[in-house]
Image (cartoon, rainbow, N blue to C red; front, top):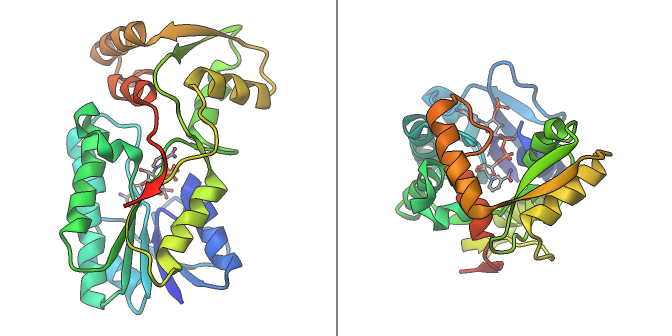
Length: 267
Ligand SMILES: NC(=O)c1ccc[n+]([C@@H]2O[C@H](COP(=O)([O-])OP(=O)(O)OC[C@H]3O[C@@H](n4cnc5c(N)ncnc54)[C@H](OP(=O)(O)O)[C@@H]3O)[C@@H](O)[C@H]2O)c1
């Protein structure tokens, strides 16, 4: 089977590519300039705005795994361009090439479009795929963990401080190991009867505070965590967004932490 992958150079994408190769699939990846391709794949240079590259990416493919997305941004226009128009462009190419399965890697954030521009863009991307004619599976991961995760990268720097403020309270998160999420993505692309929306959930109901403490411990940090109540975190994030170009805390991020993650399931 030939599987075309976008976002194969990212945190989840590398694990997905690895899992596909382990199953003996032929993997073709869209790779942006300056990004290093995973080993063992056929590389198609280009990005989501490059229609010719997308045609080359999906030509003869049995399935498309679309993971590429802009994360950690509050720029509505950029989020819509990459996450929504980008998805539309990959889907159009897949349809023209007669691809049999389109897997969109979305997020649990798509279930809460009122939380902010990223969540909205993921919900809008899902609508593009659901309204299309290519058979689809939408995979919604919660927060992903594992070496190199976003949580780990954030806490790596903060963990050098003696005290690290961490959002406390809120609904439990059900973090998923990146390898497990990758396996689900691969199943979504390969299983003959795969369809619908798959919400992923890990085995543990963890608070963000516990997850952060564990991550700091794993990083060998001796920093002590200081619980930051949700309302205060929202207030600080609101101010930070107004005065800082790249605030360490965003309102959408705090909302996501407080909302937690839904139970897993397929619908
Ligand atoms: N990480 C999580 O906790 C999490 C949770 C829920 C859902 N998700 C979803 O999972 C997917 C993968 O996330 P991730 O954590 O692996 O993100 P990541 O590490 O930031 O990787 C993003 C990938 O998208 C590519 N990309 C971004 N903009 C692009 C563009 N305009 N054209 C082509 N490629 C582009 C990046 O390429 P470069 O290497 O060139 O930058 C990279 O391969 C995303 O759809 C995300 O929304 C992630």
